[in-house]
Image (cartoon, rainbow, N blue to C red; front, top):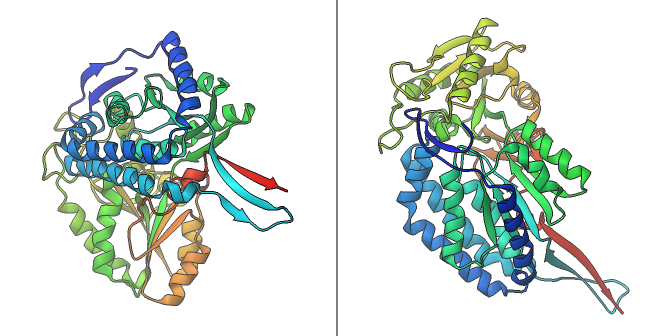
Length: 455
């Protein structure tokens, strides 16, 4: 279909967009470079005022923006509105903290004075995904703009209205023309943008294959990249945990964004002693979920983002069952209505040679595993190519320390759901990517960390 709004709740093509032409791309890149030369000299106080204005717009238009997200990628409207509000939060966080993050850091050396200065790099390309179509962009844009960089956005082709909305918000907030521009282009055109000498670095959130492609192209040009890729996050529940609280949180952690989140809990690793209790609670709570029109306030689960994702998820489930897995609940496409809906699903008895063991499942499917003890839990948690996040539930301090130390992931949440927070760095290891977003570390990824020595 190319670049278009297709309502995943109905399958209807709502609007088709003309791609940005080669001539238009050239104009935008030239404007970005010219703008950067002046924008980097604008005071932090002024940048902060503009970013706070963007936060005000996000809060003012939260309902409208939420409806646009829901229309284009299908997340429940309550979640979409919450996403717009979270974007305002990250804008205010960097508006309030950038001066501290960017100040010179003095060092005692043999010089009369030596210090570290943080300076922007220039034009940064952001290749962003559809699943959090505003949040993923603003968590890049807020620190990048506050640091004095300018942004070029290549968003997912199924959320063009969200992509254009971000540019419009920042323009209305007062940022100069050229500070943040959207290119409506396909994935095949990304490499040519990376190759352009005016683009100094790139960040991508998306699939492993997309990340590898971007990193390869950038590597040939010796350009910095940050990658946030897939995840098959473990959710470990040990004997001392509050099982009711863990099960309640597990539903939210798995079903967030209709199950389409890199940091969603996907593999539920349960101590044998509590596995039956947890499984029973999870089945009960999954059964209570309401699947339906994501524009309705009482809907818990909306559609998957597109037809190909629905097909892929169902194939993963069916292959896992063919190899010996057991369906406790769900396990099929909802075929009595239009759109790309899948039943909330729980699988157990998952063989090691099946997709349920080694793939990332991007949809409302929970994978249950049983282990004898914490040693097996950690071994299973780490037996994956991914390393994004992990949630672990125990009230034993020694077990908490062990889990924090030995789980291979970019973040570990104890007795809570994995989430992104502007105050904490976010990112993964292994094939989940590299680099960090958010907090001071996210801002520093696209800075020249310059050593200054004076005598």
